[in-house]
Image (cartoon, rainbow, N blue to C red):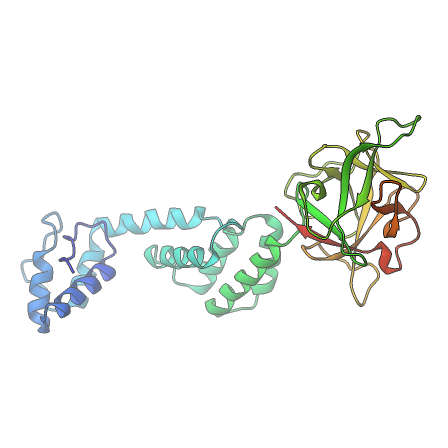
Length: 323
């Protein structure tokens, strides 16, 4: 191991002294006084040692912390701490390690202050409010960090406006899909067929959840159960269109769908829609729901229609978050 670099005011004093002592022990130097003398020789001349000398490592650490460079280190670390943000694509362990390091380097050591900083680091107001409510009475930073982890995992699984999803039929296990064949419908020649096809997801099975026709939601806003949405086929950019029990794709965006969660306890489970949820999709005008069964259409694909009130399993779909 090479000798630690000269201390010049850019390092954390405690960490630098710890590394220097480790180096001395590796080289067989165990005498405290000798280690202290060597450490002071490695301090830059811009940080003078007092004439009366220094008698311990604790005193040397305090002396280095009294220098203006350490004050500036703390200010810079505090600015970074105030601006740090967690992104759901980050490694959460790396983020927490950096967060705690910044707390240490900026001398933000009080649990309440650390809680406030961690709340500010949440990716958006939704996550922040949930996290804040869960840690309100917590006094252990260990517990707070565990709650932060769990909250961010849940946040990452939320279905949002703009999410790319797939819908898997519960009974048959096939995905809601679309082919390139347009239906021979004289009155609606722009419509193309929707069906279920395949147990392995393909590019034809990817949909984008958009704001309902006539509504505005910012991309990234989470979707609550009972929200009205549009389903846009990613490849064609056409909307899922329902009329008189039939289901198609169309450039007409005016068909809205009410998305509702299912649970074992409730027909309509409140809260945000999450990756893996069991859902039904209800037509906003006729209130009938998206349904599939093993009957084949004329092209030999599994038929999808609008029918019924959504109570039986043929109306249920598993929502899969892609991105």
